[in-house]
Picture 1 (cartoon, helix red, strand yellow):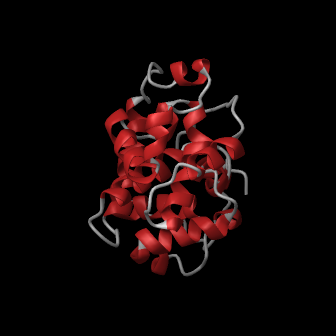
Picture 2 (tube, one colour):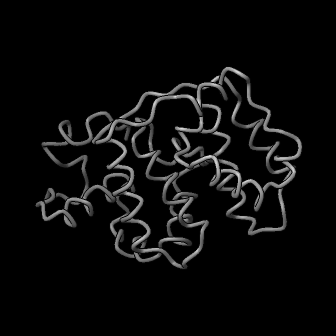
Length: 201
């Protein structure tokens, strides 16, 4: 599993509130989740979000239309580092694509929002922080709600309440014909340092 170090120079709470102040009449929970993710990851550069510029524009136009008119309050340095940043290494990009495809195979609807969600969650899986934190969510409960709303089949399969990142990677192993670890929780596995040693539990 790959990991990409990141850093930020913008307060996520301020950007979160700024986005919500420009919210459209869309689903309140999804707007909250998108605002959390964008507030946490957009200051790190567009590459950290995982979306293409057209995808980000469509997301903003649908959920936070006034943000486009007002202009995103990102520092010039942070924004310049995003679009011009080098792309992920091919293996990491393939990892993100595989994770997103796995999630979309279990989507609730054929909605564009689910494509955005899957891509952003998959991209955040490369970070070292707990997944809910890497997505800027207040806690694991919000991540569970996101998965249950948009990827309910995965939510039902994760009945052991395993962490979402290791759960998704275990499913990738199964889909690839590999034999995943037999332990219910990665913290109980002797090979944890090899697979997920950098993850903060």
